[in-house]
Image 1 (cartoon, one colour):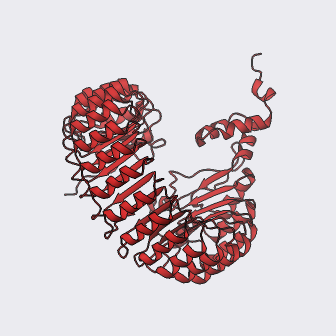
Image 2: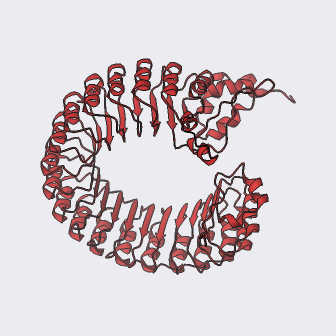
Length: 611
């Protein structure tokens, strides 16, 4: 019957709410809320997560949110969230509107306000946190990112109200010991705690928290807390027996603290350390005690050697993920111990460990047959033979990242292509010995490849991309700085990769309008494109591109002399989903600026050099 509302007549509330929960896009849910009053009420009742910036009036703003979204369980407050313009909250029709605005600190700065009290009023503070505690008493997760005006007073009040809290992120908040002690006393179900950059904390606060809610705590992160020492970790080792994840970034932690955690938290599964004063003794204890360890990340270690990795290899048989970054005293021997003992390894990253070479990585290829992701960054001593061994042994490899590996060339990539035919992601940057031969082999053998990045690989040209276009259907392609690539290669990609959604062709001096026209015809799903420093692309090519790529969301075209104000206007007017255009300020006309202001988050930046 014409005008009859069949959906509201036949579908119960529970089914409509279930449909809303399957919508992962906030914009889609917001659109549904505008259909009718019933859908608005149901959408609000089904909303479980809110993300907000700093509020100009925290108390009233939070109370307003609480009245509208009564079942929120997860709340994120982030001072870094940008709000392009004030959001009017209140009645839609008639009467006076509430002027509560979700404003960000940067918005005030751009307006030129200088009064400190006005700036602080636009930052989330204790008043807002107290209001949160009173409004959302059933909250399970709270994240306060860089809310530097939040102190112990607000945290004490909040903890007393939200006793069922399970996750708390205080990154960048200047809370003190009293606030953390209150969390330990009141939030007995707390499982996840992030204390990165909480400069106001000392051992006293963390010790009291460990005593109060240590039994439930499973995840703990500490970084840049200068007053947190081994005393805190000793309390964690004594009271947090169920701890599974620990991230430490501190120059004030020594062996004693890590030893206490290793001996007390034997269920530990994830350990990430950036502690320059920790030595082999502590890592040997981890290998001896933490037999369930699955993830180990060691950053900038200067006082430990292969002894540590030997202990990990002997004891941590369940290790699946290993990251070694700037560990100068590790050698092939240590990596061989890991490969021999930890055959379940699936992810390996070696970054700047200059004494690890071909033999160490070759041992991984021989023993870790389930490896799915490998990243080698600044590894000058690892050569082709290592990756040839990876290709022979690691048949399940899906992702390979190479950065500044000067001894790796085409033979290595051919070995990977021939042996690892399930490869889905290949990222190579500044590996100057890799050219067309290796990438052609990838195109011929790795039919599942979806993500290819070849940044500043001078020997890669059109032949490589022609093979990729014929053999693979990419979603993501980055060939920035590959000077030998021109129209022929990009045209092959356009014709062979119809599902391409991201394309970076910046700094390609031989790329012109013909390639842009082919991309427009062949890649209708394109959402992001980077054209910066492409001197031969003009308004004509840009017009052909955007005519068919109606899903385009971002377009970077800085320093493209062939693109004028007309080209910028074409992008803005033709692409209904455009969100960001990066271009010189001089190329944005006043009309384009007026037209695009409400839909483009960042339209121009002045990169010109002042005279």
